[in-house]
Image (cartoon, rainbow, N blue to C red):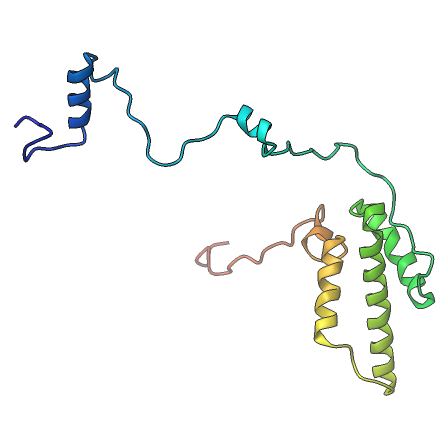
Length: 169
């Protein structure tokens, strides 16, 4: 059965066949347009001022600065800062840009410790679960707890199934 543009056997190839007959070109020479809005050339976008800006790649330089303690840092959090900054320095997971986040972590740790101490002595309530969850998250961000803190450590030996060998030693 032959395919034509006018009969039952109409197919998507028929417009090419008709176009090739009308223009004298072969079917492979006929170019069909894709549907929808066409992409504008970059030169037109640049003239209009709507060309996308090229993304700036961050420098590959490694920062070696440690977080800086803010000048108005509370006294109760200074001891926590001094303890944690040594660990962060060893992991090299925090820089000067992380100073404010690291200060928040130290203040939260000091507040949580003070609340636990007061609760233990019977003078107050324990810290909220939300505060403990946030503390855990921040400790993980700086690599002081969680998977990042265990990088380089030997993996725990897995207990083998004693029945796997079927009694044979």
